[in-house]
Length: 364
View 1 (cartoon, one colour):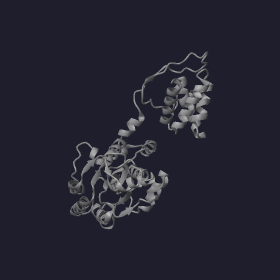
View 2 (tube, one colour):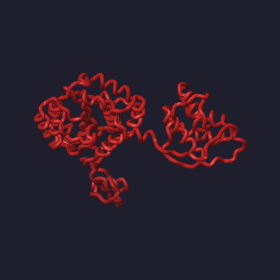
View 3 (cartoon, helix red, strand yellow):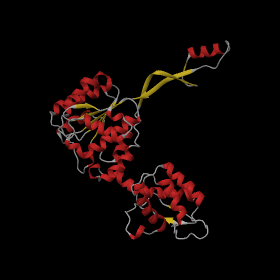
View 4 (cartoon, one colour):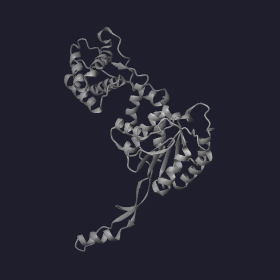
């Protein structure tokens, strides 16, 4: 237990320092500690170096984090990069394994805050490049399951269903005409289609790069997902975002959208979606998620009309507005005020925690 706790704690410190440490590498480190023990500092050092370091560029970061975590001193007499505290508190009892040499493992670790938790609550607009890189890895873990709807196909069940006479007779014939246990079936379910419309106008620039990662996570995590970019025109980007490589997918989508960071004509974009895809079947019974701040240069009457058309065929419309988290916010923008009467769920989208709430709303 000591080896596992120490390995997990040190792996978290390395992740906070900017290294990528998979769970499998952490388990390998714990097994290595179980073999070499805590007798010498060199044994612990090389156990971690062999299992946790994958790139030569990470060796300096590893050395500094090792000296801070295990020895309580700086590496080479220089101040190391700040290593964030851990996310949980626990006590570790060090076994008596002879002379520990220079290794001075602390018997108790006091953890006060987690950088991941701070990152989850921080507004996307205030992210630094390094924080955004860490947020991208967290966003890749989001899974949008979506609610389910009845299917025309029926599924076999052992009991508490409708008797399936055809399967029951076939089972009896396979048994030579003898009586066989009855077969039952019931109505099956399937996921509802999910449609995401992302506003890529200039006013959404502080949030668009995070939202496009969120949309990519939705596209690759489930089936029946369609993605569109809304600006001065409507652009379908489902195929571009279907790549498993997040960077390649985002680059392909950005190349496809020619009006990125331009103006906004939400009413015209929704009209194009309704006429070409939505009313024809894509939005029927679907969950439609619109990620936009509601600023629109078009006529609010046109936006209200298209939102009304969309609401008549969609199962649920979710509007994600990053400005909703601002103190004293009120939907006073003409576009937002025109669309809000036709929205089923109006949520924030300014942070990782808010996007997790969006994923929960979609799954209901």
